Length: 506
Image (tube, rainbow, N blue to C red):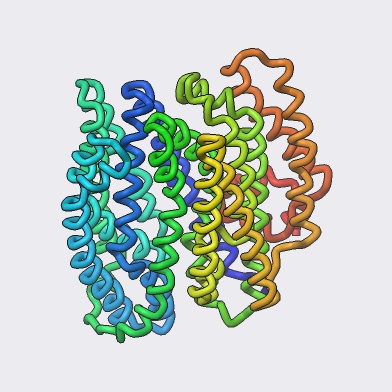
């Protein structure tokens, strides 16, 4: 890697912005669920999860994967000083997905009775009809998100996705729950939050990306867009289905309250993706614009992998070890049914996001969209077959085993494929130090629980014990590198003062 790789600076700067947004969005998301679980029963919440799962799955068919072409082609056209073609990509994608998503929305509303009969939940029909209007809205929302990714100005995406939408949704949902609207309050909050977010996002993008929006429109050949997007469209279908197949299987075999329990456990475990989700939006364009320089790509991958693993690992230990206490305190004691779900998914998500992410972000950036599709097909197939076999035997824990098995499998495949295709891998001595620091942190955290009888005390003290042990081990093993120094310097002027790395003095 060159001495001054701007990619590291961009990754850190934009990643930190996205992390702040993800943190706010995640906290508001947890708070919304905490409120919901206190105002409605697990069965009503499970019904809501089923309804939104159907909508999100159908929405993938609606946009044909075309929004994913925006943050692949637009950075290349901008790099070639062709803003008119960049605008053409955005306009053509928007027009297409508006038509296709409207048709899918009508199909969902029409087939709502059959879907509710399949899951044996009559109230599901009403929720699906009301939520069908969000399918074209979600398509526009996705176009706006990838448009912000493409110009690597993620602070504007943060405004739309992480500030406006969850704040409006929380306010509206809570207000209607307080007056006793139940399931309808969840629907209204979801729709209003999405509508306001799209309105604000469109206004901000038009203003901040005026160089693109004011350029003379140049249409681009649809062939490359389709060839790149279609495999990813199928990938998205399978990946989203994979993300919701557990709820479908649980809804088919078990009651809606089991779906609610599992959703809470899955939400807590998947919260570990916050670091990956913060770096991924800018990581893919950075890889796409330098994909021919394999050495540079590998170095950027190693930096990202170390930071994802280094920040995610201690929190994976915390929530896996303290799952019963966190579930009891955050969502009421009845949700401790999902303790094993949290532990299994914490380990699986940690492994998967470290080595390329569940959606194959690195492989996408390198242009291997067909490989990503095959991986995601395996991800879904493994999850579905294992969950379908084990849910009747082990309930929600069977669904967790299915998801974990799929995530471990595809994470391993991603590693092997990257090495086979381009000789890229993340393993270095510095990476080993980051992973190894988790051993003493886990050894300290597990027996620590034996001395605590209060769930609240565990929630407060366990993170302190694990984090202090983990950071102390990193310092003792001299785990911080020059790239860490560069990344930290971009996070803020005072951050580097707290990082004990020898390179800052140079």
